[in-house]
Length: 133
Image (cartoon, rainbow, N blue to C red; front, side):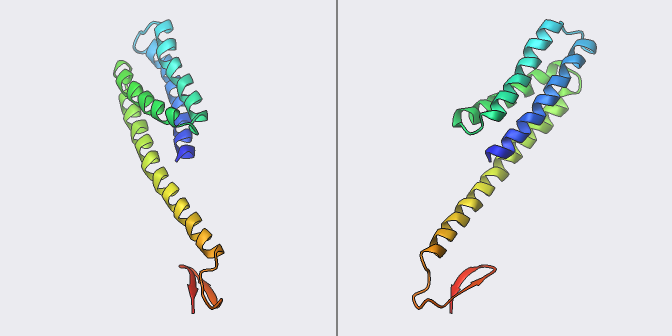
C-alpha cells in the first residue's frame, strides 16, 4: 500500500507545483502567498512520499489531501484536479490494502507448504496450491 500511495503523492506534488503559476497569473494571487501555500504543499507531498514507511506519514498525507481539496477553491480548475487526486489517493489506499492482504495470505500459505503439509509425503502442487493425494 505504501508504494502506491507514494507514487500518488509524487504525481500530486507535480500538479500542485504547476498550480502556482496558474494561481499567480489567472487568479492574481500574490506570488509569495501562492509559493508558500502551493509550494509548501508540493514539498510536503514529496517529503511524505519518501516517508510512507512510517505510519504517521500516511496519516499526514490524508491531512495533505484535505488541505489540497480546501485550497483548490482559490484556483480555477484546481477543484477538479483535487477531486481526481483525492479519488486516486482513496483508490490507492483501498487497493493497496487488498494487495497487502493477498501478500500476507500468500506468505502464510508458503510457510505452510514449507512445513510439509502432507502426512505420507505424496504432495502434489497445483495452480490452487499444494494438495495431498
